[in-house]
Length: 95
Image (cartoon, rainbow, N blue to C red; front, side, top):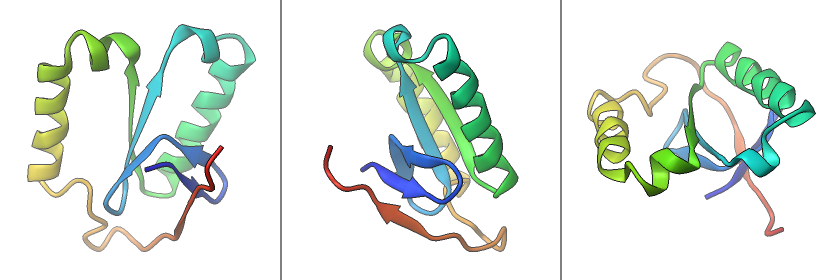
């Protein structure tokens, strides 16, 4: 589910407390959008989030491996704050 995180804006997926998954295709993530994506990633990481920026190819053509990696992070509780500090995320309104 997309949520809005203060300082970073709308993110594609927030898994539990802190695992942010962004899925990028070339059409919308080149040029100035590329720089904005990096600014947002930096903002999220400095706030304690774990950011995974996945390509369309990883999601569509290499899903088994991609999913296994995400599940490994969840198995290690990387998606939870676990004393890293609280944060408030607000569900995004439908576009």
